[in-house]
Image 1 (cartoon, rainbow, N blue to C red):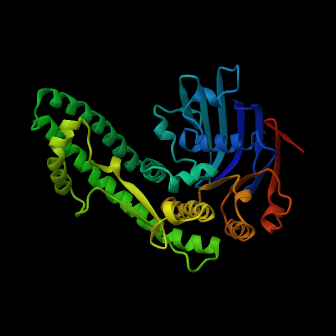
Image 2 (image 1 turned 90 degrees about the horizontal axis):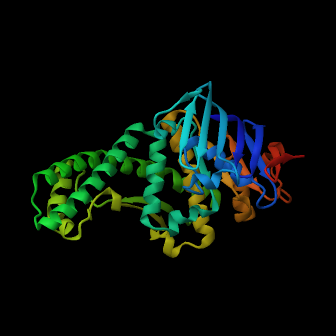
Image 3 (image 1 turned 180 degrees about the vertical axis):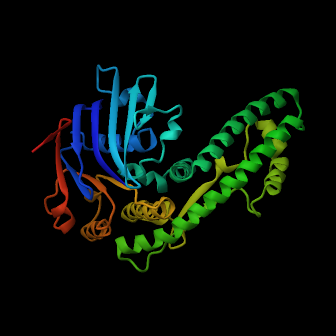
Length: 365
């Protein structure tokens, strides 16, 4: 999977911009605030239909303009495809090969990217919600069934919480409609939990190896574990039993206390929780290893490598980790790296890469 070119119109600080990319390594170079991350954001937008920086469309539209447009040509499965995303203050429209889509969710995954940004440390330091979002987003890119079932579950969860408020006002907890909702949610969760557990197990195998490659620390072991509300065998009956046990509490507090919306991804360093015991440098290496491992998992699933986006990573790594990362990238992965300078980086990857100098939303020589 490769990106051939991208075109931006009134997107962030890019008024009109077009560029063709190298099929291997592209390094975006420029001072802070010139638009390097904005270009990475535009590529990400073509992958999942949203930004990793904001949920507000207006922030992606150039000041005093009504809309922004991002277009890209990609190569996937040996075919060239055209992607387009148009953003207005209150709308978002997506096209694939000039055909407008009815749902943005249909846009997700045709261009598959893995992004690393400095804020990704939230995967370790942040709340369980951040880690659930990571699992859901990455699974959604490779499994349309997961997207459908997760969307349905979230709809039912909202409906159940609304109905719990009604039951609370009626001072009752046993109700046929609540039982129907529970059965539907249990059936969906059985599938979603199995997919999440399989995803985490496969990622766990890979992340340990990648971490040791990057860190060169044989005495440091990274591991992942899916922390699920269900401790028994994963099936509808066991989930329903937990719902029944917690029904009165759910009615009393008017919310669903148990379910996959409360689960977590645990990240360990030497069998201790990384957010408590790993240093800042170790945490950064763990997250970077997680993203590299994800690339290999996606390759296994869809048959081709995703595109890798590395925003301001090189400045955050020491010399050993930096060189090991660049060694790993010497494969068939199209990679985009942003940096303020390549001075002092002596590696053959950097020497052969396409260097794109960015200033005030323009390419400069």
